[in-house]
Length: 169
Image (cartoon, rainbow, N blue to C red):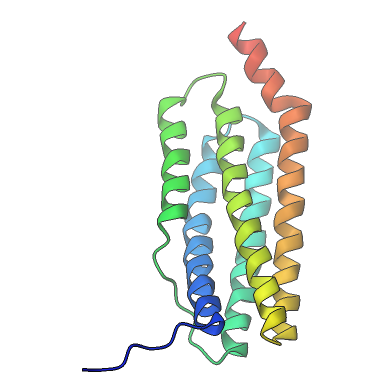
C-alpha cells in the first residue's frame, strides 16, 4: 500500500494554479466568440482588449509555474466550464435580441469575478509561502482583472443596460 501524499498549502497552491491556468485557456477561446456576437462596438472592443490581456495573464501564470519548478499545465475546472457554458447559452438564446449585450456583459463579469477570487487567493497564498515573485505576478493579474471588471460595469451603466431596456420598450 502506498502512502497518500500529504496535502499542504503548497499542494493547494499548485492545484489552484493549474485550475486558473485551465480557466484562462478556456477564456482565451471564448472571448473571440463573445466579441463576434456582441452588438455594441464598445463591447466588442472590450472583449478584444481582454483577449490580449488574457494572453499576458497566461504568460504570467507560466512564469509562476517556472518559479515553483513545475511544468505549466491545466486541471479541468468545472466552475469556469459552467460559466462559459452559460455565456454560450446567452449567445444562442438571445442572438438577435436587444438584451444580448447585457447578457454577454453579465457573463463576462461572472468570469471576471471568478478570476478575481482565484487570483486574490493565489496571491495571498504565495505571500504566506514566501513566494514574493509569484505574489507580485499574481497581483499584477489581479489588478488587471479588477480593472476589467470596473470597465465592464461602466460600459453596462453607460449604455448596454439602457440600450437593452429601450429596445425592449
